[in-house]
Image (cartoon, rainbow, N blue to C red; front, side):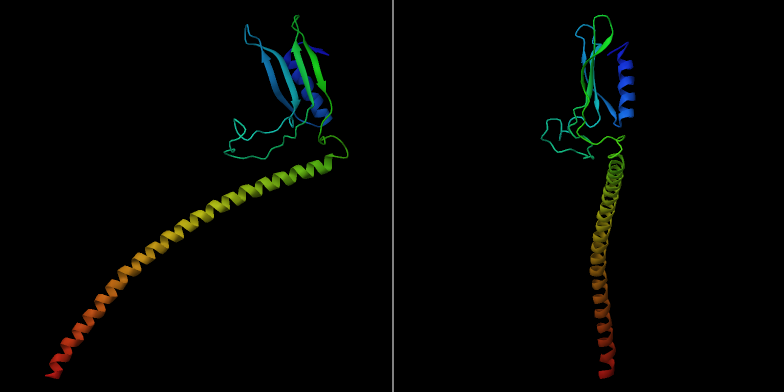
Length: 178
């Protein structure tokens, strides 16, 4: 197959992906050394490849997200020829996962997706509640610290009052004893 432009190839593969039941992703491209324009492009299934853990593959991810990548190899590779036409140089049709549009897979896949969304929402809610609990814990610890300080303060005042009352009673007792 050949296309008039890279955009025509993207449009074709995008329509093909919708009809077949998967989402397209713009993947790799190669640029010209002369003028830096794109001379080949790989269009792939959005489940192509796997997510790396960090930039070098060993660092933990700062904000982990749910990954939809499953190592799918379905793709279309187009390359600009000398006449300016974009020709298909490689096409992989097979997917390693159920497609949205396939009759057998569609209900269970959509159910799985909705469950994944629900799990993601629950994770977010749990994270929010956990932060709220941490904040309440800090407030309670601060309150307990204040109560301890106030207890010490009032204990000192009560002790002073008790001593004053004893002194007053002693003074009142002395004139009666005489």
